[in-house]
Amino acid sequence: MLIQIKKSNQEDTKQFALFNLGFRPFFLGASVFAVVSIMLWMFVYFSNGFANIKHITASQWHAHEMLYGYGLAVVAGFLLTAVKNWTGIPTLFGKPLAILFILWCIARVLFLFGTTFLPWAASADLLFGLMLVVAITLPIIKSKQWMQLAVVVKVLLLLLGNIVFFLGYFGVLSNGMLYAINGAVLLFISLILMIGRRVIPFFIERGTEVRVQLKQYKWLDISILVVFLALFINVLFIRATYLTMAFAWALFALNGFRLCNWHTAGLWRVPLLWSLYLSAWFINVGFMFFALQAENNNLSILTLHLFTIGGIGLMTLSMMSRVALGHTGRDIRVPSPWIKLAFVCLIVSVIFRVIVPMITTQFYTLWVLVAAVFWVLGFAIYSAIYMPILLKPRADGTFG
Image (cartoon, rainbow, N blue to C red; front, side, top):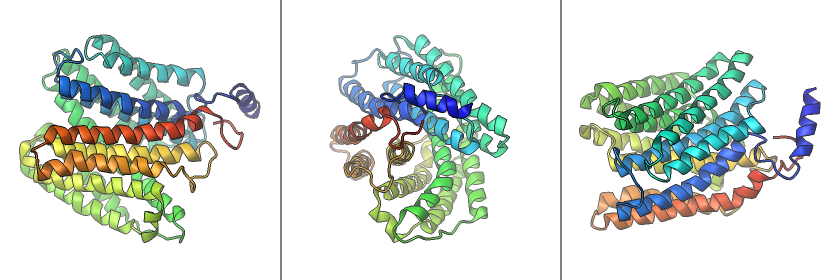
């Protein structure tokens, strides 16, 4: 019966495969939104009145959309695909997947108008988050893979963070937007550390010309998990400066040691590897910046963008590039030569948004604009390369 269903679906989607598997609509939607949202943000940033934004700052509006809009879309696409592989149980496809994606799209379109339609945008956004949690939880429970529920908990916390953001907007929770934004940044970093621990060394070992066996230490993985959890709790609830500094420096040392163990010279010849590895180092340097600037009691603007552009942005762009090839039956060893340029664009964006302002703030707004231009170029290149790949059926003719 299962084989018959797959054959039927394959025939029905011979020319259009966008809703065959979760990564397809959400990777495409995230990449297009990464371009549109930042272009609009530049209009808001320089005109200070392009969109109707009330009761929250323009920066909070921008941060929400990049974290709970772009970021959560990539997470949705990745996990709907990964959970199917982990459990062997199909996740959403066809009409249910289309409905989930439409909810995400409705929220994003309404948010483009600022806060004018925020009650409706919030309803669609939270319903999308709830449906996503259910969609990835049920297969894990059915397959009794209880260890995978750790990933679900993080997605559930992101849903809770989104609720906190809207409670802050409507005046129910004081400083709700601050909790939601800082919490989301750390949750995304936590997801990257967790999933990256599984996949990055695996990819490096099998992706370089000379096969290597990377060193892994269980005590190191547990230590990073415990220290990061302590940092998360302290930053959001306790806010003790000396603890933030201690935990951030500890993470910088521990995670840096792990990344050194993952290094092999051959990875620098493979764009889909060095982009992952470099983004992991951006996150690690972010821990160092976090420790140095802990006295501000909040994520500083430069540290925030090192985490988000260099860490989350480059990591997700690299993962989307790899996953989209592998799960459409294409050879991950021969990606488009243009994707390297997309990765370079995000690295240049980090340089102008984080590094250059540290050296000179004389032309700060110009540096922000240049960083935005390179971000847009990077994701525009990805969209142009991968749109036909994501829309068309698998190269090997199977469903997915």
